[in-house]
Length: 115
Length: 116
Image 1 (cartoon, each protein chain N blue to C red):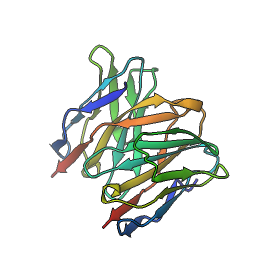
Image 2 (image 1 turned 90 degrees about the vertical axis):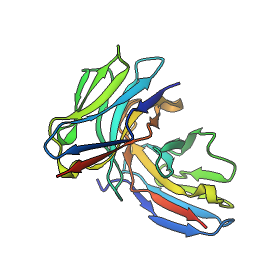
Image 3 (image 1 turned 60 degrees about the horizontal axis):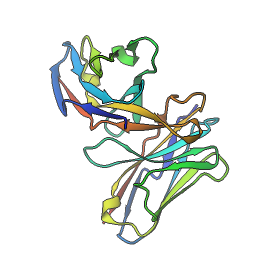
Image 4 (image 1 turned 60 degrees about the vertical axis):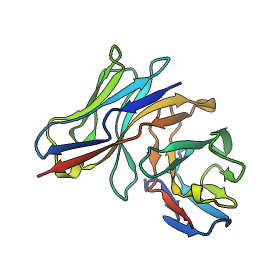
């Protein structure tokens, strides 16, 4: 069990550019979540996958955001035409899926800075 | 809607003294509640969780929390603070999602400072 990993850890980009983040969950975890954390706030839910199916999306996830989990393993989160307001820490979490309140294990996050 | 309110944004204690981090919840049904800790430059780590079993929940590193339905509270305590406890603590409520998953709704966090 190597934990949840995220890549890159830091990303600096210019406004208007596209960025993509990757999350590798703990192996055999069939649920995967994305959250966003801005400075001084707690994380906010963005979206959720059960295996490869994206089952829930927050209204925070505008049309510029897209997430995939093509083979039910790793996931990517893409932001198109980045804006300064997208600057935040993007967190990925995974859980085994054994119950409705099973523990979510978080990765270290990707810190995005949009200039 | 499910939500949590952390009553203190900053708490400062001396090493060896008790820690109390306060959290009130709002839920239309019996909630699942968690406490997570976030150390600088590290990922969120689960301290403990309540899922309608015992009301006194013991977690890692000597932390515990008590679910009090009458007070809608889930305060986090530790008898004796250690320097390594300095971090940000989040009270969290879980909301069930389609397909059996759960969305975590975080409080705004309490920054714990431990002084010598």
